[in-house]
Length: 194
Image (cartoon, rainbow, N blue to C red; front, side, top):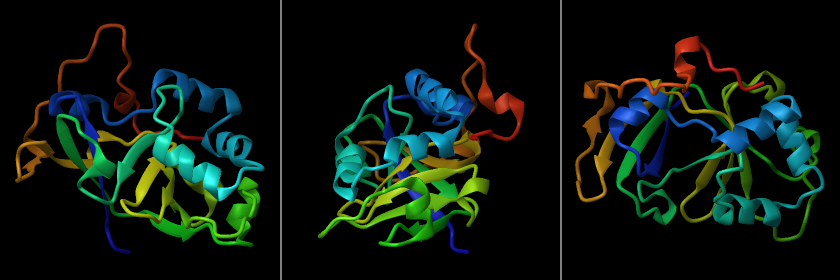
């Protein structure tokens, strides 16, 4: 399986990203927990929606209470204009088209429409119910991908500032000290998304 390489723009320094990874934010993480996990959240949120709505949600829906981590296949990060660009690598993500009539699309309850954008899922297991990493992507322009699960720092491999051309390895970065009163989710081993 080929390696999946994605990019994310972020204002936080590499030391903080090395410590925390890219986690769902407070309100978003709470929404996933309240739904009973990532898959149930997706079923609840996507049921009865059409691909155009999902496209608008991925591109325009920047919201701290929305449980996603935005990434892109494009190093320009979908036009992001922040301080740092991070490279995220996965050795085991499957890209599955959410084409008309697909079983996964039916499971999620996504409606069909004429002239719809091409959506796809990225998952770490071919069986949606067994996946711990789940993202929805959009096959237009920048190919933006929204993860509905945390992205561990182990998958964040390179970084650069907006003004730099060359990426530097994250392995050389020392993690920031743990914040008092804040749990470090990576201290608990495997990430639980369901």
